[in-house]
Image (cartoon, rainbow over all chains, first blue to last red):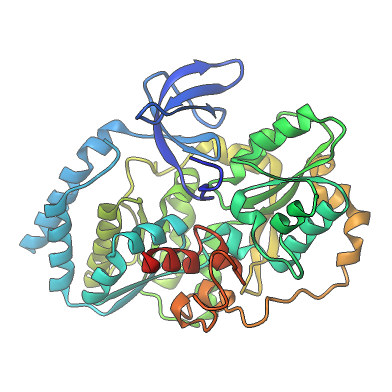
Length: 84
Length: 359
């Protein structure tokens, strides 16, 4: 998150904990006590949503359900291929 | 929840790829992909399974041309306050970098994003603040969003944004290297979605997988490309479903469209790539540093721009050679004393290779 370590295409997931709709900004909690302000003008968000933050902007809302099911889906894809 | 780790699953993916007994060459275009691949030794692991994965022109700082670097250096020299990303300030120009100019007393600020640059302009009305906007589709909506907010007129943008799909097409059209599949950049895809890649599979019969950034994601992306090859398919698939929606981020696409229009542009190491750049629409001309400071930049119009002597960044960016094959790598060219941008940027192939191989 530091300025020196900034990577142009890097985006970090965090949880929206506060929203200021007037300013189109939100406080994003990245875990381990790191909270930062992010611009949310590019997304529709509610408190509790997980977002990907890039260069100070939330660029997409993460799909919690998809995230939880990803590994199981991968396992299934592999086992299907195994049967071919 | 968003960090996927599963050793057994990783082992299973690798063993299936190994069993497929292939000899394939894949390309990705993202510094964060390269970082995960090298950091976790996946590049070597996949090589043992017959798959070579290389980084193409996927580092915004690296593909910025010598001309664009000279433009921003020139504006710094003329007394503007320059704001840009840290990596950008260290890219060597013909004689010096922004960082070196800063130590000489010129006003160069490192920012985390465009909003920091805007804040500078709002705070210091007496300064002419120029934000050097680099980055692909992930970053360009952030620039557009700020320009839509009517920033103060002492703020402007040197627009160096570029688009990924036209670059993929250019790589294929140049035909210099064999590419059996593309690992497509996850974060660019959160914005553009799936559709803009379709023509690559349809017209060039190349399999593609939009891929996330965890080690499991990259292994799975490679596995999905192998599966397509085995089945004789060439489609665009999405592995990174937790972040990439098929339609992308429509709101971001809309603001991009409002503010930018596509333009033919050169990339470092490449000839001009049709419609691969973004410039500000006329409506935003007062924020376009190239128009606003046309007279100050005039001295550059006749100038010939050259790559640093001996630097093979162009070949690295086209995927022709690996970083280690450049004679300057780790000798004259190191992160502390970079000759070319691929050694400067934390997303550059050479920088990543150097960082992890030295540990």
